[in-house]
Length: 145
Image 1: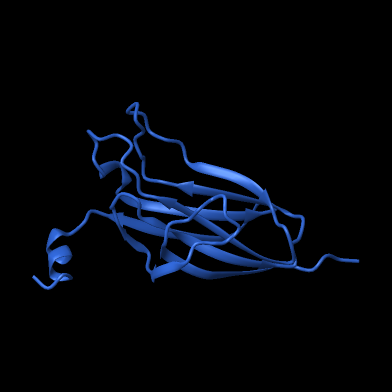
Image 2 (image 1 turned 120 degrees about the vertical axis):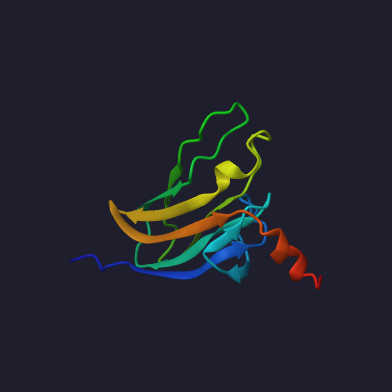
């Protein structure tokens, strides 16, 4: 009997409330966007719903523009694998803006962040976020000045 094809849907993407990796709950979406301001602690990414794939191994990767760590070295892309737990499964893939190397500021966070999810070597979901420097004029304008 042939196995049914998984159904994959991106259910949300953008900026989220802080995510607790130890919680079973996924983070809550705050704003749908693909443009993210480089402020420390900003959580961004996307969630997917995957049906008909219980037990399959999911691979994920976050390609960042060259974030510099505390030792001044460029970080490798963040990747990993996880098994799909049931036949109607939600998964969040995201990252947070961090100031790891104070001398660099947020400069190493700026640029495209590509997030990819694969199943059986095939890309099933991906999103690219553009991390941009904070526009001080927009910051004050949003506050009524």
